[in-house]
Image 1: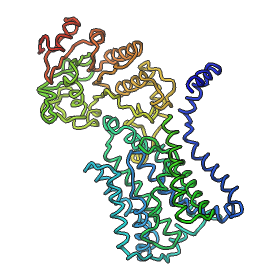
Image 2 (image 1 turned 45 degrees about the vertical axis):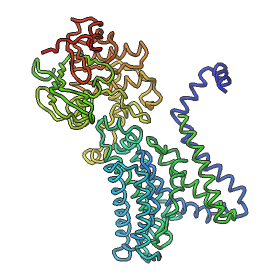
Image 3 (image 1 turned 90 degrees about the vertical axis):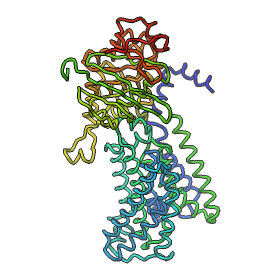
Image 4 (image 1 turned 60 degrees about the horizontal axis):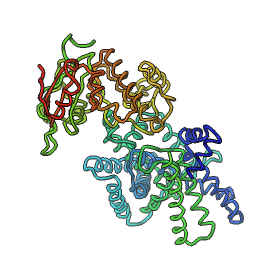
Amino acid sequence: MTDDSAAAGRVLPGADQWLARRRQDAGLRQYVVYMAAALIFGLFAVILRDDGFLTASNLLNIGRQAAPIAVMAVGMAFALAAAEIDLSVGSVAALSSLAAAEAVGSYGFVAGAAVALAVGAGIGLVNGVIAVKVRIPSFLVTLGMLGIVSGIARNLNNLQSLPIRNDAFLAVFGAGSVGPVSSLLIWTVVVGVIGHLVLHQLRWGRHVLSVGADRSAAAALGINTDRIRVTALMTSAAAASFAGVLLAGRLAIGRHDLGENLLLTVIAAVVIGGTNLFGGRASVAGAIAGSVVMAMLNNGLILMGLRVADQLIARGVIIILAVALSMREQKET
Amino acid sequence: MTGAAGTPALEVEGLCKSFRAVRALDRVALSLHYGRVTALLGDNGAGKSTLVKCISGVYAPDAGTVRVDGTVQAVASPEAARALGIETVHQTLAVIDPLDVVENLFLNREHTRGGRFGAWLGVLDKKRMRVESGEILSRLDIRIPSLRRSMSALSGGQRQAVAIGRAAAWGQQIVLLDEPAAALGVEQAARVLDLIRSLRDAGVAVLLITHNMDRVTDCCDRAVVLRQGRKTAEVDVGEVTKDDLVAYITGARTGDLGP
């Protein structure tokens, strides 16, 4: 192996350097997710050509399913960038869907979204403050919070779904569209653009990456690492709430389990998208592309006619493979 | 430069710091002067890095005072130290690998654009920071292949140069260097020493931790020796030999404790 590459270096002087620079500057890892998306799309287009994968309504359906995953993934990217993790996002989305449904009924559609976001930000604040002040890894804090929030959601309406009858809410956060473009797609793009700008153009985004890459170095430069970690966890929880709003809008209900099972899907989407699971590197565009990959997988496995049990197994295997591949790519740089 | 003539840039008195039962610093006094390089010497575990961390706000000392320009200051945090003009290059360099050179030079000192709202939001003025980074590096004669490179792509010497460049750029008064040339090649180490001399010539008060006696005699004016948390000697470098310094460090001799 090493002999071969050394020989190649002699034949093509500078080739190694060129390759190293390509890795450094562009980073193959940035493209892995897009290649994966194209590959899976192509694969399903061939295998499932008779099962309606390529129909407009199915592709639209994939987009609608990707939207809440993508919104959660963008938030999760910030938590991971800060070397934290938020395992409570699924249950936060579920509770938020209920909160939104409750508030919409009483106070209208703006209040519905606002209350849901406040619920998420509040849970994120509690997660963050406990992680920072009590010095418990966010992994454990948010795992506990996952249970607490799930329980609250189950108690809130006795496991019944809460219908939403506010047309404005359903149009803006669900079935509506601007021209041919679904409002869910628009929200995904809006969240993606905001997330990308925050990560790259705002001081806070750079500080999140710094704290995630090397917390003590960031502290030595005077960055308030506690504040950054808390706000990163608030971001992931608030994004999860908004995903809950979109789920509620799409299904016209709030329910105790909406989005609850999306945690693994979201983490996989973010990591496949090039965000480092252990902090310091994040890609918002990659997280969204990763979400599309995960939504396509879900959709394709269903179209294949797999039973739910087999879908679970297939999805688990694919997620482990995909994450393993993208993490190997990350380690090389 | 700044401050009245003869007033030390930084004056530390009676500094104590314990970690559980271990007395890391025991009533240490130290003064740094503008335009002079002071060496801080001592064996491993003598308390050198602890002293630097107390001055730079990383640790809170148990007792003692820190004066900057003759005024007692509470250096409660790294941010407070930086606000007082004290910049530090820690042993670990405190550079952020995934960020590029510009972002590292300006970390937590970012320029923003877009007026007051942009400042509140923290909208980065990347162009201005890039231009100023070029100026900082060329002023200090630091050569980096590209400002857009992430730190992880730089050599050890380049990383060190960026860390020192950052301290030099913001530390207009006081720069603390914790073994900045450790683990460097001969040529790179020489360049770091050039950097330290140019800081001194610009009137900055420099504290240099090192284990290398050649560097002490090369570019330091005064040397302070710590041993087991206490100051055991303070001498003018011109008046002693390298062997004397080693003897102070190992405890074979105790020296003049200075004024």
